[in-house]
Image 1 (cartoon, helix red, strand yellow):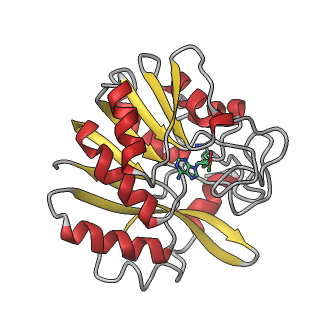
Image 2 (cartoon, rainbow, N blue to C red; image 1 turned 30 degrees about the vertical axis):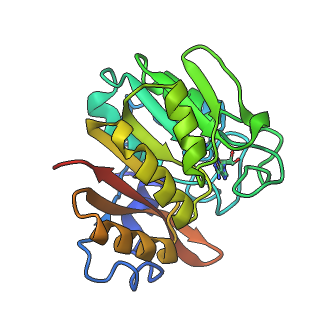
Length: 255
Ligand SMILES: C[S@@+](CC[C@H](N)C(=O)[O-])C[C@H]1O[C@@H](n2cnc3c(N)ncnc32)[C@H](O)[C@@H]1O
């Protein structure tokens, strides 16, 4: 069988040693998702809107106008695997991290001029045709509103700021994605203050874990055993000669 480079790379990528220590003792999920289902349009949507979630080339890690950086991620095929069964049923999705391009912590300032704040929100809107999309960010310059997209000024490290948002927006979400500051403190603060707004059968995702963060989340979820957590690594090929992965936590309220 003739495999395109994407398939070939994914099939031959080995698990790197980066996460070996942090994931010791865990049942390890490694998502090796290939695009054998050409119907999925998630990568086209990532490309169209230029979010860094959907690299389309394992060699260059390019996505839309973003290219050649370890910072571009390979989440999109995994998201398609996770969300395709409920693509038409999702009514409300929240993402923390709209994509500020200003030079502030956790921003997209590294990206080229092709990047526009709200890239992933627009991708989600087009992927979930019946959903309202809510975006949160602590940079007021990243806020905007568009068809089926509303955004709010929220600092995910500040429970009072999250409470203010909840007072303004009474929705319950089918999907919550944390693509904000990416420190465990920020992630856990958002989780603790938003988990009551996740639907009973909803999915909560924390993106961009590094090995140290994974250890912090392991401690947190060990102390909070009522949630079900899967840590997933997604091979992204070699960067500077080293095998790298994207890693995320997928949390649900029950099996
Ligand atoms: C990686 S960018 C989001 C990219 C976007 N989701 C996409 O895929 O196109 C991370 C965002 O998190 C925001 N952020 C950083 N710290 C934050 C905080 N404490 N509270 C809320 N948002 C924060 C940044 O301003 C930036 O817009």
